Length: 315
Image 1 (tube, rainbow, N blue to C red):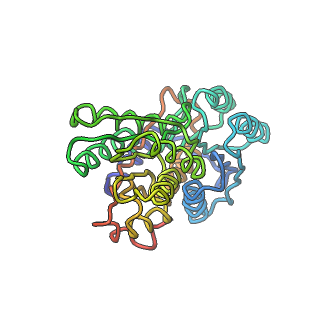
Image 2: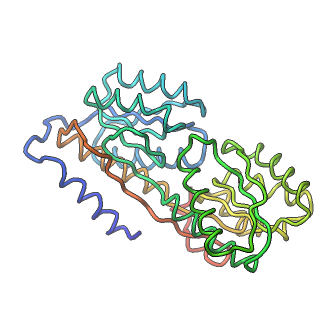
């Protein structure tokens, strides 16, 4: 998606906000609650959010680390609500588990913007990668790479993580439609974790004498799959795709270890969330009948085009 198109979407959302009741307040308490602060993606979102807020003269962002535990994230949402934060930017670890928290925040007049994973309750906005569409594109490219026939596997996200679920759905649907001679022989949840992905990939390789492709629904797990395949002497035989586009994975694409990834500029994704946050706070809107969606299509990065992702947008 072009920058102009993204801005047009933001502008369209802004038009939904009444301009007659602009709040006099110029700075607000904004909380950022990702699944964990330690991942490259969540760090990049935080940088993008913080830079956009500071550029607008707003107070610095307050971040908390849920350490990949939904129950911890629920408790931290309560902390933000009880401390009277003006807006919360949330990456739900589990969509269902965090729905009640989002409802509670919105009931208190605290708008919520979700990143990548939506919840079941209406809230102000969700700024997401194109999970289903990109998963579909990975299947399309991988199927062509392996000649339209063979055996592939999926390294999954936790079942409550809707971003990963949608990526897998898109991949499966396109494989079934475009490549009936490609069989998905295994799928297992590595919980977004590289070390767990190493173990799972080892089990895939041991169980399948022929394995032509692996789709890991995030880059950490793709890197883990590459480590296992290289150790087994089978790296050249398996097309390994990731998702997100973190810097370390781009380097592995350049080195020929990972085949490709669905890259998104996470700095800009975070900045978009911040700009939307400021728009809604300035407007003073508190109730939302439905969640406004901003979807950012990926750049399908391979060894042939990864150089187009310049250092300033590598995260």
